[in-house]
Length: 125
Image 1 (cartoon, rainbow, N blue to C red):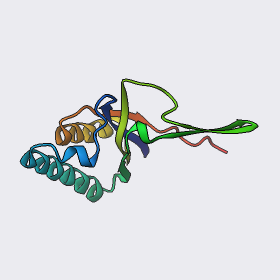
Image 2 (tube, helix red, strand yellow):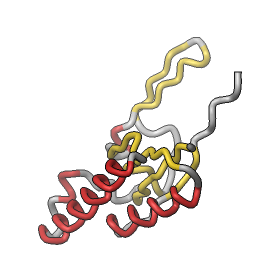
Image 3 (cartoon, helix red, strand yellow):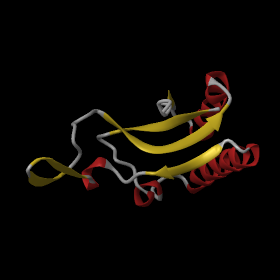
């Protein structure tokens, strides 16, 4: 089995949060939550879900660098980008095709693009 990282991209200009989502049409928001809930339930019941979560926007990030003697803590993300990862799932499935199938379901539930990447495997020791 291979683990895959499914990520939900967001536009950096928007930085959606739970608070800003309250501005959406309540019926539309409820439908999205229901679809994502059903997706998460299906992932869990299949045994594929390792973990999942939503991330706060990049403006809340603090970048830590202790690689050069002095410790730096810099407010903000380590890289400026037009998009950022807003949420993720880590799934453990048999192959890439299965991971892509789950990504298609996530994309349909969220009405958004989903990026799929395999996690690196631990080297043999």
